Every structure is written in C-alpha cells, then in structure tokens.
Image (cartoon, rainbow, N blue to C red):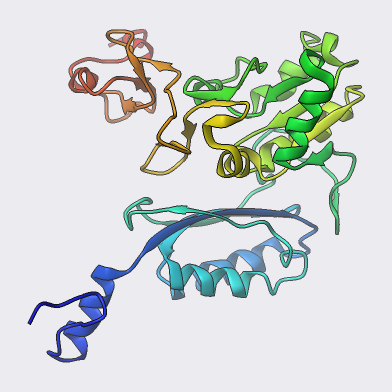
Length: 318
C-alpha cells in the first residue's frame, strides 16, 4: 500500500507521532506590541515557559515598553503560543506576521528582559501607553503609502530604519539610507543635522516588521520633523500586498538562518557580489569564527567567503 499524508503507518503511537512530525508544516512568526508592561521579569518567565511548552525556537525581548519576538515552530504550536500570548493585556491586538520556515531557522530559544525592545540607546525618550507609542508618526497601510506617493510624488521621502547592510539587498525606491552599522547609530545621525533638510517634507519611516520604524518615527518627531509617517506592518506587510509591483525593490534581509526572502519570483537582487560584482542577495560569514562581519557573494563565488578574512579582520593586528 502506498502511504499518503493522510495515512500514517499503523505501527504504534511512537511511529505515528514520528511520521506526523516529519509531515508538520513549519512557520516563523514576527510580532511586537508597544504597551506598558508593569513587571517585565514576570512576563519574561511566562514567555519562556510558554515557548518551551510548545517547543519553539527564536528570540523574545521584553521591556517596560512591551514585547518583540521572532519565533519558529510548527503551525499548530505557534498558533497555540500566539493565542495564549494575546491574553496578556495590551498584547491582544498585536499584528502577527507569518512566513515559511524550515524547522531549523533558529539555533535555540532566547527570552530576555532589556531596557529597550530595539536598541536605539534612548530608553528614556520612548513613551508608550495603551494605544502604542506616544508622539510617533502616523501609521499608513501599504496602499496608503502608495496613495501618498501618487498624490505628492518626489516630495515624499522614504527613510530606512534598518542597518545599512540590510538596505544593501533591498530598499524602497529612492530611499534615504543612513550609514549606520547598528540601531544605536540612529540617534547620533538624527542629532548631526545632516537630515534637517527633510524636516519640511513628508517622511515615511520603514523597517522589517514595524517596530524599529515606529520608535524611530517618535525620535524624528521629537527632533522637529513635522510630517512623519510609519509604514504599518513594515516591509513584510508591504511585500505581501504588492511584491515586486510596488515601490519596494530587491530582497528583504531577515534575522534567522534564511538570511533573506523574496516576495515573488520577479524579485531582482540589489546586492553586489564582493568578489565579482554580480547581482546577489546572499550574505556569507567571514572565515574567522569569531567575526560577525557579513559579505555578499553570488552562488559562483560563495566558496571564496571561507578562503580569507574580511577587511575588518585584516585591520586587526595579529
């Protein structure tokens, strides 16, 4: 008899469970909620127990400002986890984004309490209430962003709220991409005055899932940017709706073992291979195990990533 997905072998509970595990569909969820959390440590312990119960891997950060998480697991386990997490006051309306997973997207589970959900280095500047960030930008859906550009054309500025290496493989057309290696660089960039000429223009902040650009929009508003918007749901939601047919170009960098995703088959990579200059979206690690520098390599040159040290390592004295 030929077995199908609906016909596990009848060789006992253990074999049937193993068969079901092989057939399980794995997904990744990305979500955040900006809301006051009175006891971050208690929420952290609850989240640890919850994620462990359902066998999930990935990262959860809890702070006084809310929760930020990216987790992988089976569809059913993630559904149970999300359903229970929504029971916490302030988390009920969180926007959960789903994408395909492999079951091996994260090496382990990490649940931590930190001063900030995203490390801008300005925890005292952020204020949240039951409605989210106080004094942040106006939320625009993907279609509303397109409408804004249709009405006001080149006057609209897209402002990338991610690290510059993420923008190297994908960004909104004509976007301003600050030269920052980490999120902590944004406050100094804004305070430098180099973007003051944008203060009289409509600025749309964007990031992967929405949290970085939501916080960034409040930092910009408090520094005198008069018309600030935020792409609601981030690049993920925009790509789901418009793929390569809208204003987004290239691939999306993601912080798991996939490293990048494309929204459709028509995606054209914006990154350039470090070795030959060919188009690519694939990052490779440095040959040094202790180095976290990523470099872009095409498929034909990927082997060269392990043949030598990156420029950062070459600058370190032996």
